[in-house]
Image (cartoon, rainbow, N blue to C red; front, side):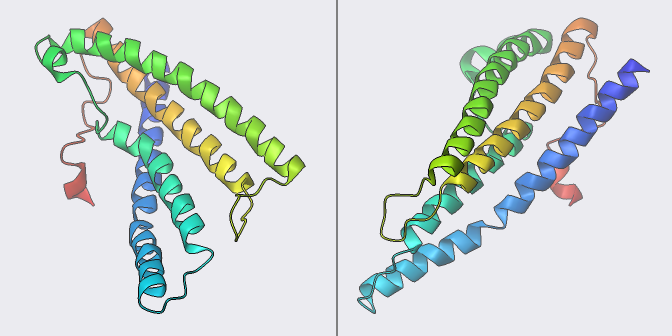
Length: 184
């Protein structure tokens, strides 16, 4: 019963993080358009915009932060391969359990700070110091959401690796990340 609930949690996390990660990737062409429009406007029309720089910064921040959990799910973050690939899969799971716990600890701090910064941005009406001066509170909401997504992804990975470390079997053997792109 407990094992079934843990598997359901991990599968749900996998689906939510994959949905968010793939969805946010569709903002890349919009970001490219904003940057290209600014270049065109600045160098060909000689009329730079007051909003394109700030908007492109926000869009890039959203894409990078909200895509972080998906990159973790796809094992796209850096690893010390020179050591990691030379040990057995169970020792790799031990490395993962330790590093994921450290990552969760760090991300809980980021989450708490993001909530605090959001409240501060609302209370004091923080804006970017630019001519356009957009408000900043939405950025801190996104940071809280992205760190929460990353935390649940790491917790799912932690459970999978802890199970593998203890039993020698994968918690979700049917979850094949390498072929996930082919199933879209």
